[in-house]
Image 1: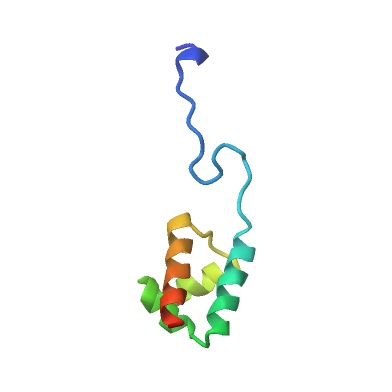
Image 2: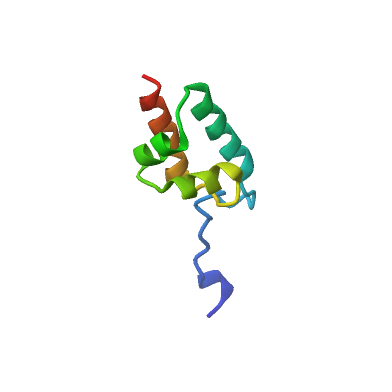
Length: 82
């Protein structure tokens, strides 16, 4: 198989740039927003449909944020702030 017949696919996360998001920075931002509205890890984790320990690992940057999970966190925090 030649290289010209191999289909090159762009990474869905970085769109081919090779840049990886700063997961710790994302986590700090989510935590800051959560604390700003006075919500607990339990409340946000429940709203997201994930466990409290997993959200804690995400906020600390120990686990990586997937784009859909990050969007779900923002949506949950927005809904809880009403």
